[in-house]
Amino acid sequence: MSLDISSLFSVERKVAVVTGGSRGIGEMLASGFLANGAKVYITARKEDALNLKAKELAEKFGGECIPFCVDLSNIEGVNEFVKFISDCEPEGVDFLINNAGAAWGHPFESFPESGWDKVMDLNVKSPFFLTQKFKTLLAKKGNSEDPSRVVNIASIDGIRLPLMETFSYTASKSAIIHLTRHLAKTLVKDNIIVNAIAPGPFDSHMLGKAVNFDYSFIAESIPRKRIGSPEDIAGLCLYLCSRAGAYTVGETITCDGGAVNAT
Image (cartoon, rainbow, N blue to C red):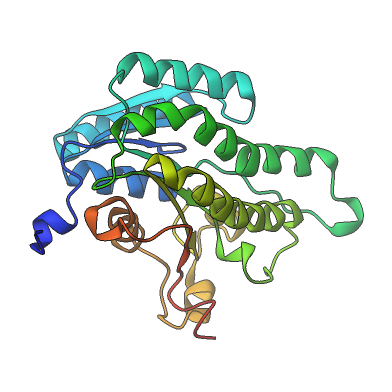
């Protein structure tokens, strides 16, 4: 047993897969793993931006950041990605971070089917089938002392009522929270631990577009009086993936400056 912090929270020499890792929260999570000695695979749908980001992160943190351009909203993309990782990492992977997501805002009376399907496919269907297809790779690395981890990125909008008319988004994030518990029950026997993080407001393309990248009024509404930082979200994810988080199973932890529990 070691209670030394360098052992307790270490992810050194682990292999992490972060979907949607080229910007926003995904970039923050990938950065956290790279800064602490993990090898990281990131995905996105815009190839040029993805490749540039992978190169930037690898140079910044001095680690391996491997990009793979893919659309994970359909099973063909999921299978293509799993084959790529299987070929690159035949010994398995340690962490799967299901972060890729989408949002759609529209008035209730005219909310379109396309806005429903796009969000549900990427936010719910994709994490389920990625976890299903990655099970073998995760099980190869997991054991009773050091289980593999799946971390689903949910949202506080799956817990509380949102300010905007993002009906499919809130439904999808509520779904992923309950799916996390179901997957945790199913996979814990295989030494794969599943948890979720429900972020509040962070600097991201998704939230930024909705508020013209002016977060001041959002920060004022948060008990901590600021939006989230990379340290906040990366630190929590590192806890869940390290020895420190090896006995935390099926939880959804808010990371929101008190927006849910202190208002």
